[in-house]
Length: 141
Image 1 (tube, helix red, strand yellow):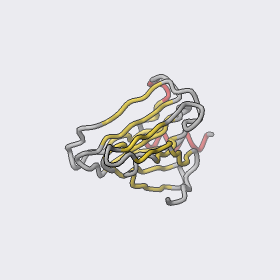
Image 2 (cartoon, rainbow, N blue to C red; image 1 turned 90 degrees about the vertical axis):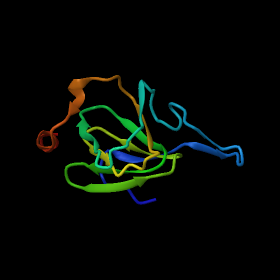
Image 3 (cartoon, helix red, strand yellow; image 1 turned 30 degrees about the vertical axis):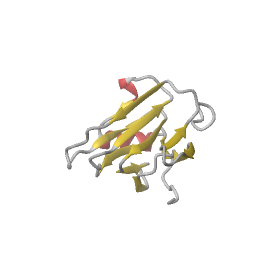
């Protein structure tokens, strides 16, 4: 795996079991694989628009962990100084999306399913949805 250079990020690995020919099993536990209590999760699928770009925001405090549980996509991260892109295509490996980290997703395969786990409940005030505001926010912190 490529070294993550952006701040407020890192890899997370789930426990995995290959039960072929009967499939594979992936296990993630709060406070073990995900280093916090889980307060929210959501998933994204039916990404049929080839030009779709998701995310395009940062959080002030919220920490999330993103996984591609099926298919693949490109994750772009930006901490205000370093930009880095990753292809997520292995369901047992996810990437932490820490606070003050701009992220977007693109290049979705037709069968792509994305799972996101969060340490916070939804709070619109925690979002930074404008890139210029994000860079200004980073400079102040």
